[in-house]
Length: 392
Ligand code: PLP
Image (cartoon, rainbow, N blue to C red):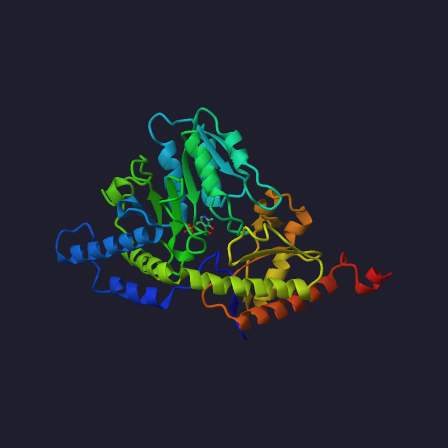
C-alpha cells in the first residue's frame, strides 16, 4: 500500500545529505566542543561552521545564534529570558490566542507566577491585527511574542508591522518562526524583531536541536544554568549531531528553498482543488492567500476529524487534527475556536501539510482516499442529509 506523508508541520523526514553530514558525529567526531585538545577542537569547528550556516541563511551575525534543544526551548528562552531579567518581575507580555503550546503554556506559566499576559485575538481568517497588538501594549509591557506562521492553518502573521509597532513603543519582540523557517523569506536584517525561534526537525534536520536568534545588544537571562556554553545563555554540552544537521539543512535551504516551495505549493494547490472539486460540504480554515505554501486546513462537515484521521491512516495517508484528547473526550482545536470557527466544524477539521518528497501520485492517492473515507463516514452519519433528502 502507498504511504503518503502529509504531516510535515509535525515533523519532516531527514534529508539524505543531512544524515550523511551528521554520521561522523556518531563515530570518530565524538569530542566535547569545550575541550581544548584535538578531539574537542575539530568538533567545535564543526559547530561553529553550523552556526555560520544558520547565520548565512537568516543573514544575521553568527554570534546572534544560540543553539538550544528545540523550538520549545527557544520559545521558553526568549520569553522567560526577558521575564527573568532583574526589574521585569510581574510585568506585562503580549502574545496571541493561536500560539503553539510552546509559547502559550510558557505565558500561562508566567501568568500563574504573577506576570500579566494579554492574549490578542485573531480575525476570522486566523490573522492577528497589528492594531490589536498596539492597543494591548501598555507602559509596563516588556515583550511582544507573535508567531510568524501558524502551525495548524499556515496563516502568516504581519510580523513586520507588529515589530514596527513594538519598536515604536520601545518594547522587545520575539517571533516563533518554527513553521515559517524555510517556507517564507525571513531576512533578519529587515525584520524589526529582536528574537526569532527556529527548530531543526521542521527543516529536514533531526529532532532535539533548535535555536534562538537574539539581536546584538539585546540582553536575556539564561533559563538553563550550567557551564559557559552558548556564551553562558544555555548551559549543557551541545547536541553536536543535531547542530551539524541543522547547519547542513540551512545550507541546503539557502540554495533550494525557492524551488522546493514552488513545487510544494503546486502540489498543495492541486490537492486543495482536487478535494474541493470532488467532496461537497467542506470549508477552508484560514486565509486563502496569506498562508504557508505547504499547509491546508479543512473542515469536513458531518464527519468527526479524529475518525477521518484514523480511517485515512488505515489507507496509508498521514495527516493531523488540531484536536486534543482530554480525559476521554475529544476537544476541538483551540486555534480554530479562537478564529471563530463553528465548534462542530472545528471537530471535523484536518490539517494536511506537504513537504519535500511529496509527488503528484501522493496527491491523487490522497484525494481518492479522502473522497472514499469522507463518503463512507457520511453514509454512516445520522446527521448527514442524504442526496435523496437534499433533492426533496
Ligand atoms: N512553535 C511552533 C509554531 C510549532 O509548530 C512547533 C512544533 O510543532 C514548536 C513551536 C515546537 O517546536 P519543537 O518541536 O522543536 O519543540
